[in-house]
Image 1 (cartoon, helix red, strand yellow):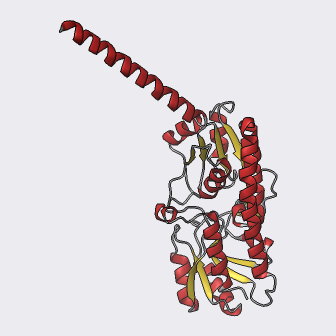
Image 2: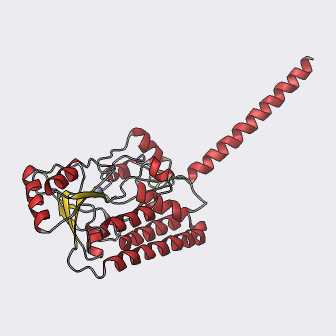
Image 3: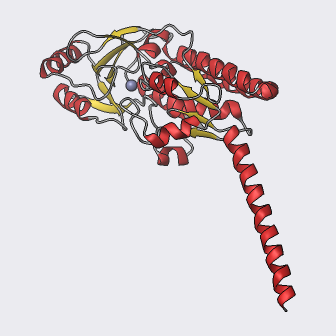
Length: 305
Ligand code: ZN
């Protein structure tokens, strides 16, 4: 009886040991290919390029406005043991330069998706004049293609043995972006008199520039920026003069200003999504970069004629 128990104990120990071993190997493997992206478009682009070879995470939680995001100690730890960190721009994820100084760059490869893209210079609206750059590159399908190419090249550098797969997946995604670019071009190529659209914050400058439109933004580069009563009064006048029929608002950031302006001008509102965050419900409903950009196109057609 005693012997039986001893054998049983040995078996249990072996079983537990083998279990532990398997567990740690799996975890190591997964950690070695963990890829952290900052916010939704970076996540969507990367997930599609990685395909089945993936553990792609999004750092900024679904539904959280990323403009004023600051990473927690837990977020930094998450980045530290990731193989790759993918972000949009130092002018959007303003906390990246600090993170870069504090992590092992040999362990974590950092990919700047707007690398080599010329950003538009802009001024911060509130307070003293401060030069900054507009980071909203992903909202122009034309420029989104460049971001996807940058992400693809960075991933190939980190995972050279997966080059064929990464190229193939990226090509498939780029084809869809070309079609989206085509849809935008076709929709606005015969625009004659109504090229102006009013947005909640200045997120659509690249889209406007690439497709021959003109954006009138209520708030500045960040949706949380304050807007003075004088600016609102000026906007009201401008909307009337330009015969604006719709004011676009966002669902993730506070839409109070857009709603107020619409009421004062006496016009309707519609959603124009800057794709800075997708809620869990939206993601579960199968929405993604393409479906939202098609919805945006439909919404813009209400104004632009
Ligand atoms: Zn923005």
